[in-house]
Image 1 (cartoon, rainbow, N blue to C red):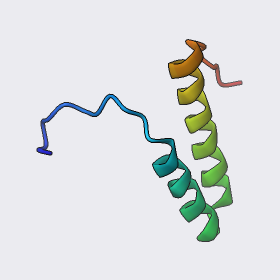
Image 2 (image 1 turned 45 degrees about the vertical axis):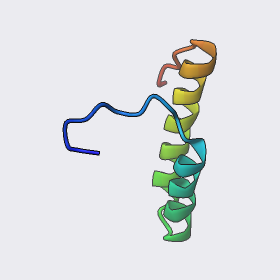
Image 3 (image 1 turned 180 degrees about the horizontal axis):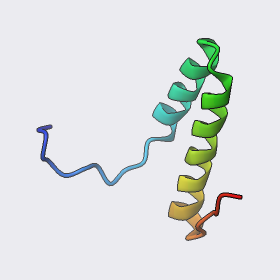
Amino acid sequence: MGLFSKAKDTYNVSDRLKNVRVLENTGRIKEAMAYLYLVYTEIAKKKFGVEKKYS
């Protein structure tokens, strides 16, 4: 894939969860929780068409 190629249309949840595990294992718990919330909002938007709002 080149720098300006189109982004993939697929959403790989397992890769996202691996990133959360890496953040957790390196002691970056707050970042892991924030990233997990972003994954949750992206899944809700793609699957159900619901856009979550930050409070």
